[in-house]
Length: 502
Ligand SMILES: *[C@@H]1O[C@H](CO)[C@@H](O)[C@H](O)[C@H]1NC(C)=O
Ligand SMILES: *[C@@H]1O[C@H](CO)[C@@H](O)[C@H](O)[C@H]1NC(C)=O
Image (cartoon, rainbow, N blue to C red; front, top):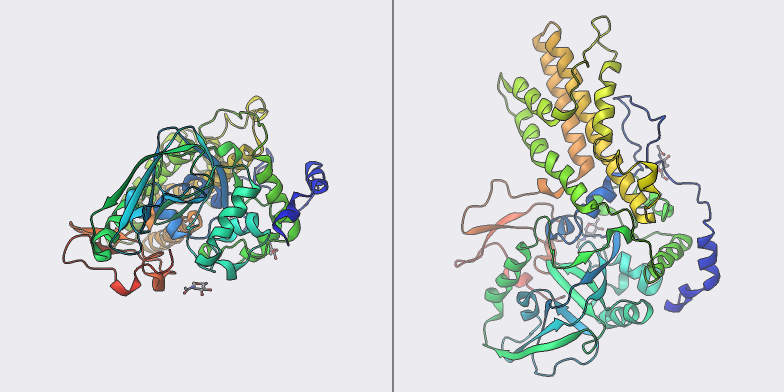
């Protein structure tokens, strides 16, 4: 397909009329919701995936953990922000080129250790950018470039995930979409800038001291990536979540559902998307340039983060406590469960003595917990102001928090019944086994990168490093971060792995 064939106006009309894809999953629960504590989520729902990807935007660690991005989101680089470009000659670019958000990354683009010139530009007005999440600057056919492929070629072409196609990507995105630049990540962030004369001005162009390529400044680059490891990540750039597009949106891209089915999250790709969904995605991206309503005003990013804050550390502690072999472990675990549900444990929620298998007594606790973060957003007057993306965000947070609540309330109800009944050792063993299984399942379902860490923790002067592009390409699929030394004697990154594909 030619890059321009997705401009067809007739198609936009079709999409505007809202063709029924009729495969949409019920992301948002209705009043007739099932409050049964034993019904797990449909395996094809994606609310938790939208939740995790959206709350991980511009953060380094989760986008290395899941390198295949699924989110396309517009944003703004504010006036006065510095951007960097490194090269082996003093010829400052006048046309489209790459810049980075930190000079340590730009330094790598001086391919020779000598004659390294660093150009620093500064934005003179807000730049409109489009961000692709995941490790989207990594030239690998395994999926990190899938979502940009859709916009550039109109289909996923893994064989073009090579440096040779990079200028064509840049020109295509700049020519066909109304943005000043395209933001991508591999360890650190880079911007494909559509113009070096409009929106930026030169601040300095200097020749840097000659220095060895390895290991010194590569480590500087590695070090710079750590600044964005955790929330809020690269907060200098402001994303507009009210206009976000997600390929996990099952009403936008239902053709991807069967491709994800039964696969681990790391294997999720955009490869396989059908032509109809591709056109719908392209139409959504084009619509980003038109005027748009302001939306509800809800700060989604921080709403999502407040939920991660409430659960991330304590779920891990609960998981670790349950792994202990200790006679008072059950009581400690139960206390953590109680703490996690503190605002929802109603005074009058007590089990009926007649039937210990009936869990209806706990349903009000489940309902209160599940609605806690979203009841305001779900009111008709607020929803009336929603953009299309905000409906997706609401569904994501509701579905995710509901499952957290279902799991924890189920565990808590088990504990309450156990503690009020005659406690036997075999009951306790069974209870702890169920708790372990449930916490494990919930954490796997959520897939939060807070739980991917160096174990045991690194000791100064080591730092925890997630192998991946552009170093350690042979460990591309690794899910195990490890400690590396950022000072002599350097350790952790074999020299031969260093950059041949940036
Ligand atoms: C999930 O999707 C797969 C693949 O499309 C389908 O076979 C399966 O029936 C779906 N499962 C449910 C519970 O909807
Ligand atoms: C990574 O894993 C995927 C899926 O398991 C596989 O197809 C791919 O070849 C692997 N890539 C590398 C570089 O090992």
